[in-house]
Amino acid sequence: MAYFEATDGVPIYYTDRGEGDPVLLIHGWTMNSTYWWQRNVDALAEEHRVVAMDLRGHGKSGKTDAGHTLAGYARDVRGLIDHLDLDGVTPVGWSMGTAVILNYVDQFGTDGLSKVVFVDQSPKFHTDDGWEHGLLGEFSGEAATELATNLEYNRPSAGKPFVQAMFADTIDDRLVDEMYAETTKTPTGVTVDIFLDMTYSDLRPVVSEVDVPALLIYGEQSDIFPTDVGAWLEDAMPNATHVPFTDSGHCPFWEEAERFNEEVARFV
Image (cartoon, rainbow, N blue to C red):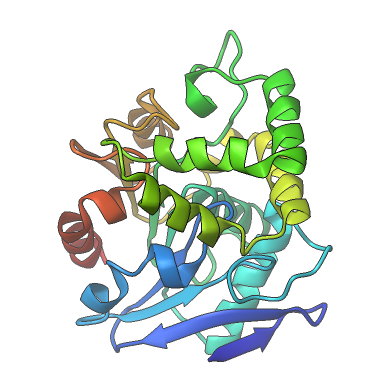
């Protein structure tokens, strides 16, 4: 297993496969690289160098109480890029991973990046009179507080329905339990901290600063982000292509893995 140490000494786990133009896979909230990219790494590594990381507090990376902000995660991404000397990398961010990429751009610009891939994420979770593309289609500070409380005191009651809601089709209860178990590799305190940081972030001003080509992969049946936020991003970004996945919810890389791999490989 490969690790590098972040600037504060936290070990960050990653895998490094294949050769060619580099791709960096960044998972979503409470997820990890080993389980969630299992349908993608081998296929993408046939023609590309594929690096997949576990964000701090997630998967096999160090479990620390510190640094659980999108900005902190973005600095860890920068650390890994520097550690591996990844020049002209294409980061692929699923859900929270997209927010991490936007935070990277906010801090470092597109230095070191060739292209970017966003997978089913909104730049702002809270809805208001001027913003309809929030989490679950409608989200507020009160809803964020309620969800954070449920996570802290009865995590399964919040976590398992979230797992089920990620998919266009109903998945078997045993698979829900398996996937939920993967999320518990992220400690509850970390889960709450990064959720609250993410839910109060407004990354819309950063979107126009993404001046490299962008591929926007969004599930047309997503219950997590049910509005057409992919089309909004395409209009707001200088060089973006929105590719809807008709049969997917929040997880196109899992639900339509073959097409996802083909689209990403072609784009890179």
